[in-house]
Image 1 (cartoon, helix red, strand yellow):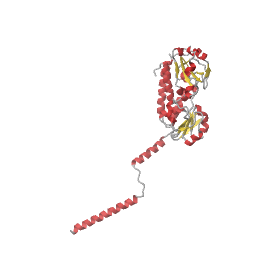
Image 2 (spheres, rainbow, N blue to C red):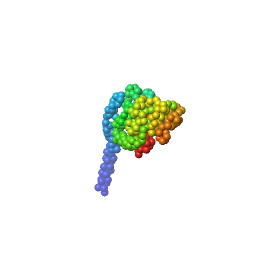
Image 3 (cartoon, helix red, strand yellow):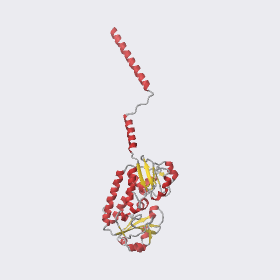
Image 4 (spheres, one colour):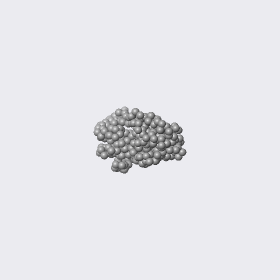
Length: 335
């Protein structure tokens, strides 16, 4: 019996000692930070790797050099062509000029997006308050570059009408480089090239073409190397008139000019419809005896193109792909 009682007493003593050690350990660790789990550590490491993986870019543009050492997260663009590209690439945009947004870009009119001004006049205070990492200008907004560049890194993606398709590809490639989307932009360029080749093949048998713009009852024409000259330069349609004056809104012409040019295909940009101004639409303006005398009218080969794509956006590979489809359909190309 004595041995039994001695063994029991020793057991209780050992248990008490173990309990005391456990309590001490608990007390010592009560105020300590818990160790990060392996998952938390992996997430932090992945985030650090993502940040360090961005390769600094240095991009030449018409008004200087853009230098970036981190992926832009807050982006304001005044160029709708660039907006179509960023939208296609899945890049989030913070601010846009909400006037003249096309139907495809109407979602950017929502309150979650900053109204950055107009296509021509930025709201400098609103842009500065947004603290952007990148601002994009082009064409209509290019004159604001010096002031915007004081706010944040700014890139001018103005296109060259004399070599329009090539400049669009080059500018879109710059966006691809900035946002690490080079492969996606290259795929868009390949898609456009394939469609352009199909249109060029059909253009050989399509006869001559003339592209005009109507605005407030007036008509202007465009030729190779002009604002809409890519119809000829990139898509290969034979111009009905070679020596059209190169100007922003084309060469003012008469209806006699259209009759004498006698295009097989007439492409029409309705500026009034594009900007929501004026009362004379393109169909009404061209519905006259002189235009009726052209082959294009008589053969029902007058195409009223999408004015938003051609006049408002007027750039970006997604838009050029749509335009190639539109022109291809008009001349029977297999696009």
